[in-house]
Length: 92
Image 1 (spheres, rainbow, N blue to C red):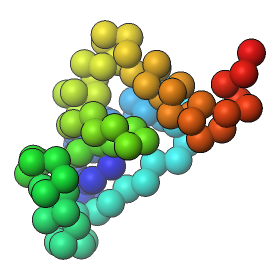
Image 2 (image 1 turned 30 degrees about the horizontal axis):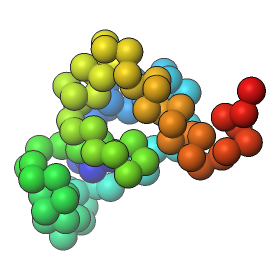
Image 3 (image 1 turned 180 degrees about the horizontal axis):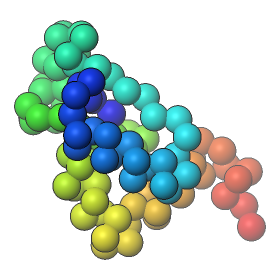
Image 4 (image 1 turned 90 degrees about the horizontal axis):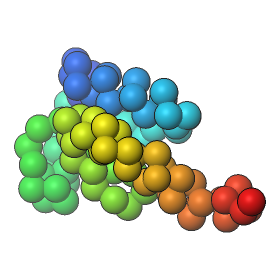
């Protein structure tokens, strides 16, 4: 997740992900590493934070993450990424 230290939407995104059981969130602080902001803009086409990736999937910002959750698709995406990282965990 591309973020800054004083971004309320970044904090809300992190809270939502943690409420879904996500324990490892890779935070890229664009306020501390300006070159990473350039990277973020090139990868996403967006200038604002947060910019959230789940696995290799660019979700977008907090509003996009919350919309995925409301639509019931966030859990599915998280399970797919967890299954790809740990195939044994996804077996019945």
